Amino acid sequence: MSHVVKVALLGLGEVGETFAEHFLEKIQEDHVKVEIVAVAHHNLESPVALGFIQNGVPVFKDAMEVVTMGAKVDIIFDLTGDPELRKKLRIALQETHNQHTVIAPEVVAHLLWNFFGEGELPHSEKTGY
Image 1 (cartoon, rainbow, N blue to C red):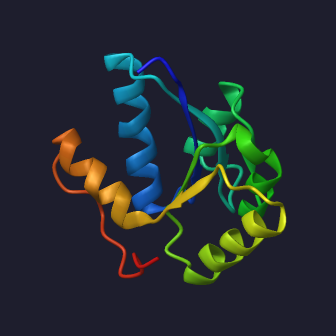
Image 2 (image 1 turned 135 degrees about the vertical axis):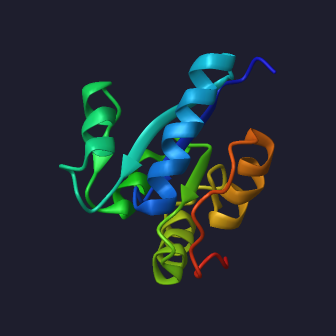
Image 3 (image 1 turned 90 degrees about the horizontal axis):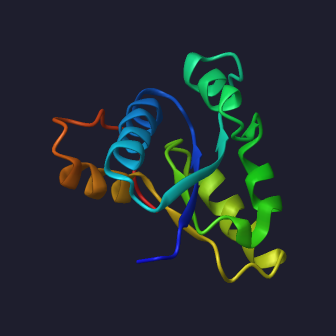
């Protein structure tokens, strides 16, 4: 695959932080053609958010700002566990006529995690789409 898949990660809580760290490690170590192009987290001072900022990745306090990036994002990983946010994201993508970007809920992160072979990913009770 020569196409670089551009992803945004929303939520750097217990699930999101663990996923982000291991996902980034896989990208760097295995030279996977995936780029993290944006991150959103309510705490811009968290160590993981600061790490992304230091590496030039846009970090948004409001997850909805990721929608403004349009087709520059292929996949939005919603790791917030907030079904209302997911609903708002879907509506915003429709309103901006973005038929390119897809939203992957936490259950997709868990699916990928199984391929990582990194033990257990912390689990949120709110993984539905």
